Amino acid sequence: MTNKGLKGNVWTQRHVTQARAAFKHHSMTEVGPGHWHLKNKKNPCHFWCDIVVMGNCGLAVWGDIAGCFFSYYSGAKKPEELIHWIANADLNYYGRQKAHIGMNGPELIDEYVDDVAIYDLHMHLKWTQDDFGNEWNDSDTYGTTVGSKYTLAIESAIESIEHGEDITLVKNKLYDALKEVDSDTWEWLGSIGRVPSTRLIYCVSAVRRLGQLLKAKKKQKAKTKNTNTIQNF
Image 1 (cartoon, rainbow, N blue to C red):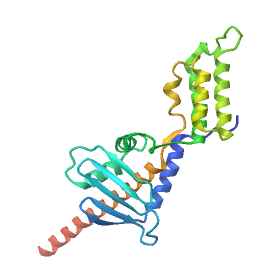
Image 2 (image 1 turned 180 degrees about the vertical axis):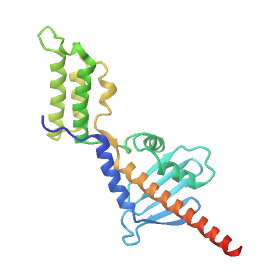
Image 3 (image 1 turned 90 degrees about the horizontal axis):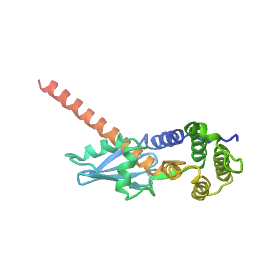
Image 4 (image 1 turned 90 degrees about the vertical axis):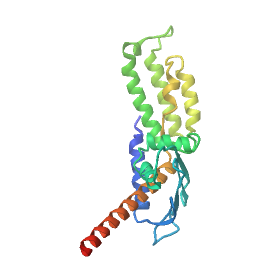
């Protein structure tokens, strides 16, 4: 099989790069305490968004991107703390976890990508063969080995994905095919092909841009203060 798929981290990084580029030239306007508006002045209708701190525990992002809510941050004393909290979040773990809480589930923060699923299945087959060791060559009463059953099931799943079959249906068939030879199938099958959703990627990237702008503003304010102090002295 020539299609080796695409590693999930590679897919994610490509979309992160695109998202960060989309917000690279955005500037901010403070609408009110804990509420900022981001836009590109040359193209104000493109990827504009509002970012709002909710109390001292949550963060909302929405606009010309699909919205996202992040919870729960405890003990924040300033709205800016919540901005930097998400601006530096790991998309695959911490950022996803807080969005999962804020969005009340994974439906909008996960995506399942065909090429990533194909890569994951190839890798899983390799790892499983290593894990099974000598059992890989054990045969049933018909002379069919565990390895041949496993390989056929994985390759059939990959072929189905390549032909456009829905990943959920493919996973269901794969579970039925493997559950008797691998009792742990249900544990790994759910994550096959899973990546952070573009919704999550763009929202975190927008917050990251706001965090950069807030830091620059703070730095400029401190520089101006020092200049005024020297002049007054």
